[in-house]
Image (tube, rainbow, N blue to C red; front, side, top):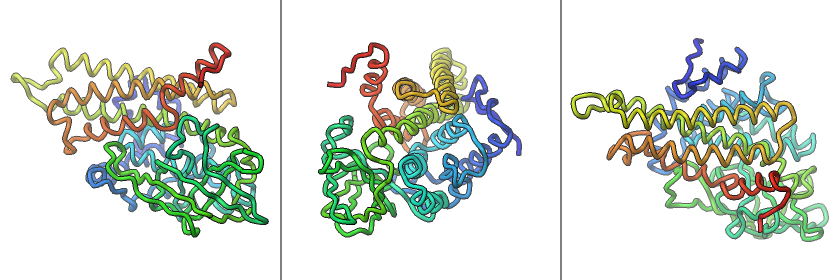
Length: 392
């Protein structure tokens, strides 16, 4: 299989990958280009998710690369970042689905679960046999989840009783399990629970009317006296610090996905600039268009350099919260700027779903906000710079 470099990877960062990693990237790229790209716009427009792609993605290893029990070969954080990049440069909704399934659902169980919980749930999630979701954000609690979590967990013998509500929970309308984060009423500490979605008292309602990530099935979840056995409490989730350890691993991959969205928009803009004729020549032959494309490529190249380095630090055990926070804040801001330039290049055609650029432009808004807003991430970085917390 020939490894073809992308026009959006101007400095060829993919050359850092091993040959085996390149082969896996090309297998994913070929599948996305041949099977996902042709259909995803229609699903996005209908606000539906293409569930037929779940098993093929599982067979390509997309839900198992990160975890010891299931990964097919030793792989780097840079490689896992390029997987998120590759998914997002085709469709951010598909990248978000994989991020929830692999990063947040598998990640919570891998980082916070017992050996028995890992052995029971990770292979089933990795194979696509079951779908997972991650329930942290609430109707009245987003950026302040560490302190403002309102969902409660009360111990009752060998069981726990959960009450509360969650919002913006990806995959939740068709998930088989949801990792629910709730405050223990006894010690006021945040704990995690693997909750089968068939449990009485658990309901998930699709959030309608979204203008971003329309194919992602976000839901409002209500928990009314949901009884969960002690065996489904994540054994090593005893405070919000443990929740944050999961988010620390996934935040960098959101940064990678943001670069992927910018790259997808740029690649669409370059192709359009060569075929759209104005004033007797392709618009790509005009100075102002070349200026926008060069600025876009500069943003993408700088952002790739940042996320590659953050992932290298993760591989070496050197990455801290402020490193992934800076990457998420910077790359999503540059993504937002880039997709705006690229959409501008399309003129009126840039606001219809017939052209991929409209989808990239709209989806960028969600990535800009989720897994920590730009403001919250800059405060994490600011605390590192000054030694002073300024969150409230």
